Length: 119
Image 1 (cartoon, helix red, strand yellow):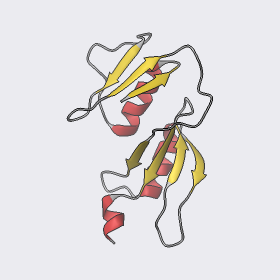
Image 2: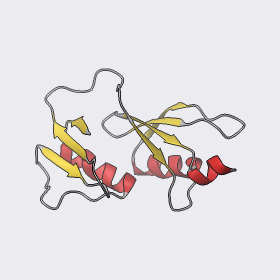
Image 3: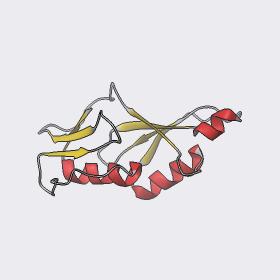
Image 4: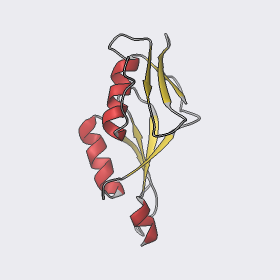
């Protein structure tokens, strides 16, 4: 999956902190393309583009709490890393999601963890 970016290294580094996925071994600040490797393909490729983001993403990532974190704890952790809440769709019964923006304004959703869905 390729994600347009103003600063590929910076936003890939943010997503690395957010997901725990490592940057490519040969990726450096200023590179026009930076990759995050997943445990198996596909991978996330951040590529420099000259134009800024102007409309809603047609494709986005869904993130779940891991390491025992709930959806709400994951939202707070990501806010602490620099994401912002864009649209809160959490419901009183515990269902729903939170649409967030990464530091470059790309939308992504935080959904309930597997453990929360099994309750």
